[in-house]
Length: 209
Image (cartoon, rainbow, N blue to C red; front, side, top):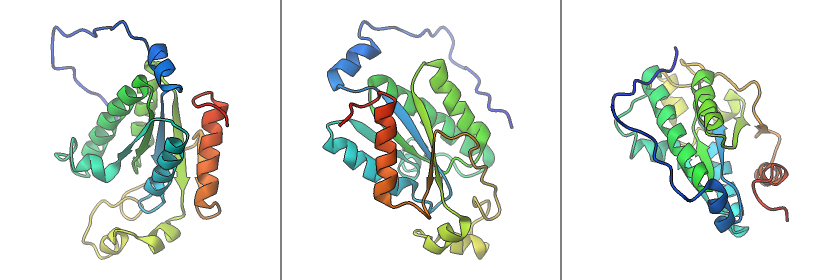
């Protein structure tokens, strides 16, 4: 399934301003970046993102979380869970993430985003805008994610009450070259946060301690 979006509006042109990305970074004291957390439902994506957001705030770094459920309660409330709707969900979030990153914010986007093609589209959006982007694979075995089942969704999927559920009757295509690979069955939350912060420092996104 190839992601294509038709440009319907005509006679529109990108309007450049006088404040540059570098200007915004100098105001904030750090650069913008999108961290894209992907993994099964219950893998711990949102948990890690919340912890990273708190750790960044303690360092005076401005970040913002874009969470799957939060987005579906707002801007994407008109989308379901078909392959087409999932694709549009990720496309919209990719565009939002790109805008936040351009302002100099560290964006923490937590989405199952099960299809590689959709995630690759978000990566290409950032590459086209010369914006930093890191895919974070929150790797959790299905057995473990199902045992956690914080929302009771796996139980419903197994009972046939939910159709097209990722990991049960819909596939999850794991990343093959993610910038960060967090094995949640072997790492503590503190270790996961430290790996992410260290990587942001190494990449020159945020200042070193």
